[in-house]
Image 1 (cartoon, helix red, strand yellow):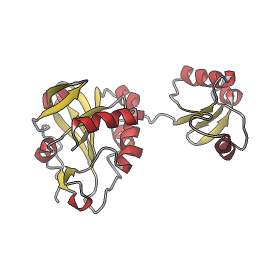
Image 2 (spheres, rainbow, N blue to C red):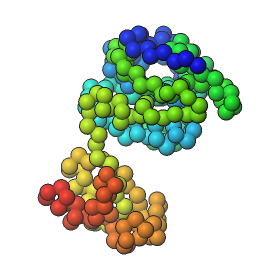
Image 3 (cartoon, rainbow, N blue to C red):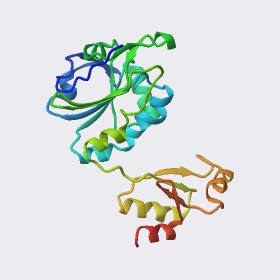
Image 4 (cartoon, helix red, strand yellow):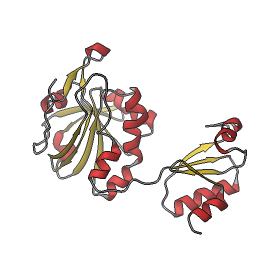
Length: 242
C-alpha cells in the first residue's frame, strides 16, 4: 500500500448510482463538487465502530461551524451501496451530511485510495482520509498513516475545521425530564446564546441512578459544557453572564 497525497489534482470523474426516495438516480462528480467548496471525509465502512461513534457524528455536529467558513457541503464517502449509506444516515441522524456511496469503489480507486481489507472480510474499501475540494480541485488532504489496523488521528472533523480557521463550538449536554419548566428555561437560554445542545430525557435516555452518578443529585436540568457541570437554569444564567 502506497498512498499519494492528491493535493492540487482534480477529483476523479465518476458517475454514482444512488437512491432518492424509491427511485434510482445517477449523479456525477460535477454534481457534488463543481462550483462548490466541499469537505469530504472517507472511511472504511458504514456502521463500523470508529466511523459510527466518532468520524461521522463529529462532522455532523460541526456542520454549522464549517458553513461559517464557507463550506457548501460535507460529504461522507464509503465503499458501500446506496441503501446501506441511506440507512446509516437515518440511524445516525446525520441530517447535515451528504452520503456518497462509492459502491463499486471506482472513485476511491481512481483517487488511489482503494485498499485491500480482505483480512477483515471487507474486500476492497477506502482508506480513511479527509480532503478540502474547491470547484473540483483538491486543495488539502489529511491522510491517515499507513499502518496496520484502522488509524484515526488526522482525518477528524476538528482537524479540518482548525485548518479552515474555524472555532470549535462548545460541547453542551442537558439532562432534562418531561414537563420541567426549569428545563425549558435552560434550553431557551442555550438557544438564545447560540449554543447547540444534546438533550437526554429522563426515563427515555437515562435513569435516576445515572443522573445521581453524574451530578450527585436528582435535580434537573443538569447542564454540562465542555465536560464541566454547570448545574440548573439559575447557574446557567450566571455562567452566561445573565
